[in-house]
Structure formats: C-alpha cells, structure tokens
Length: 398
Image (cartoon, rainbow, N blue to C red; front, side):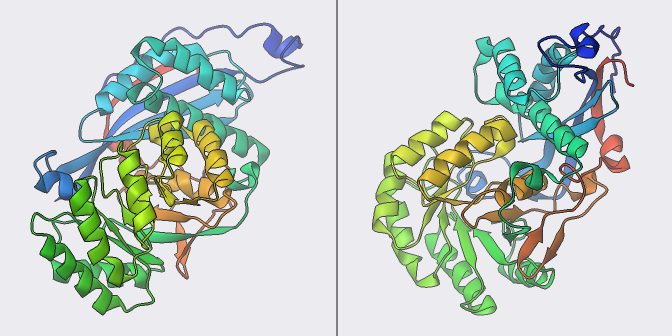
C-alpha cells in the first residue's frame, strides 16, 4: 500500500477574511483516496458471461474519497468499477485531488466543473467523471453532515422510505432451487421485490426459471427480469411477449444500452414496462433515452454518471417526463436520491458492499428506510481499511 503526504497547501487569505467567498468561508484542507478491492464470495455470472463477452465477476473495485475542512467538517464518497477500471479511476482521482485543496466545499457544482475540466482531454464522461463522482459524493455527504441532516432531507425528501428489490440472489449461475431459497430469504428480511437474471442460450430455460419463481412466490410479489443487454431486437420482442404472462414490474436491458430506438419500439409494443440506463455514463446519454421514449423505468447510476450533482440534473429531466426511477446498485447513495424523487421509485438491494461500512440499512415491509444519521449515514469499516490496496493523501489533516 502506497501512501503519499505532500506538503499542505496554504488556503487563500479570503478563506478566513471574507472577500468574494463571504466572511470566514470554510476550506478543504485534507483529502484521502483509497483503492479498495472487495472480494465476492462466489464468482458472479449473468448473460454477458454466457455470451462470452465478459468473464465471471470475482470482485468490486471501490474508489473512496474522504474530505476534511479547516473547520473540522468531514465527508466520504465513493465510486466503483466491476471487473476492469478500478486502478484507472484511482489514478485519475489522484491527479485531480490537489485541485480541491483550499476550495470552499459548499461550491459543489463549481467544483464538479473544475475537476471535469482538469481532465477534459480524456473526456467528460466514463472513467474520468466516475473518478470525480467520489469527490462529488463526499462533498454532498459533508454538506449534509454539516447541516445535521440525512442527505435525503437536505435535498428535499418526498418520503422516509423507498420500495426495494433484491438482485444479488438471482444471477444465472445460481441453480433454481437456490434461487428460490434466496428469494424467500430476501422477502423474510423485509425486501419487497425479487429480480432474476435472464439471457440463457436456451431461452426456454429463462421461461422455466421465471415460471418456478412466480409459482414459488405467488402473483402478488413484485418480480423483475434482467437480460443485461444480450438479446437482439427479434429475440427481445419474442421473449418480451413470452414473459407478459408473468406480470413483471419491468423487463430490464433487453437490448444494447445504446440502442435507444430499439428500446423505444419494445416499450411501445409490450405491456411489460421496459427499464434501462444503468450502463450509461453521462446525463447526455440518458437524455437520448428520454428523447426517444426508450424507457418506462430509468435506471441511472450516480457513481457512473459523475456523482450526485449529475444525478440531480437527470432526475429533473426524468420527473418532467413522469418516468419511473430505479437507480442501479450503490444503495447507500441511491436510497437518499430515490427518497428525494417525486414519483415513487425503487432502490436495488445488494448486500455486496455491506462489509465496507459500520452501518446496515434498515429494511422492513418491502421498503428501505432513510437513516436518521447525518449525510449518507455511512462510516468506513476496519474491513474496508484491510482491503485497501493503495492510498493517497494530499493536504494536512486538521
């Protein structure tokens, strides 16, 4: 593990004496970045593995940003990558971090733009903005902690809990018997819905698994199906029609993530709502989905599109079109963002990241409850520190 401690920068004099930033503005004094490898208990496979496009997933790479100010306020945020990309996010964030020292942490929108333009030569989406997302989330966490409010309350919550569904028990590598056991266990733990993966080479196997799930759970339990972009248009239409009988809450990513017109045609044809968006890496890409009426349910991922600042922009666009919202993964962040969305949303429950935090989400009655702790309500665990592969610090800790 490599830890670097550069000489602290001296904040601008305006930070304590007034000027354009206002009297006695607080300043960012210290930042720590951590590259964390989270091992998965079992290699995970979905349709992308069965089609040979990806290898089974064995870990999640996390980029954590911890920020502290001169006045002693702190915040933590994270981004992530599955399979490749984690070291690249860390390297990019390491280059950007010194640009935040001495800045007012309240100026989150301006700082997002500053960081993005610092690395604009490698693009303003994708890995570059995913690195920025860790800083952006930490700044929002800091702002809410300083206000003494959960982030959802700071943003303007519409509800204190959000419908939640489980995905981590329904991957394609899971035998049917175990899949049913996992579904029952999730419901017993208070989760409200069950999502299973589809996309087997033998499409009849998908229908057999869905039939088993529906017979096991009954007609009243919300069930979703996720094809992970692995069908072509004719297959998606045939499978979508065949799945109508299961009363799915949605059919997720039946086509390539960038096939907006194909998703739009399916959404116009099927009774089952079409969901997509998790693989897109900018607000602009999601805007194309919205323009094309390609999704009944939009599934943005805050770390993937650049953080909370960008997610809020996208949520505004989605609200204007009266779209359902079901943010992808990272429930520790998305719970708060979903609670602040006007139309009743869903949050995806994964237990993968729980060892990284001291706290656990409160789930009951099919809903995940917004914590009453300030900010995101998370604290990095000793296990997260133990899984840290590389660290970088800049500035001087208060």
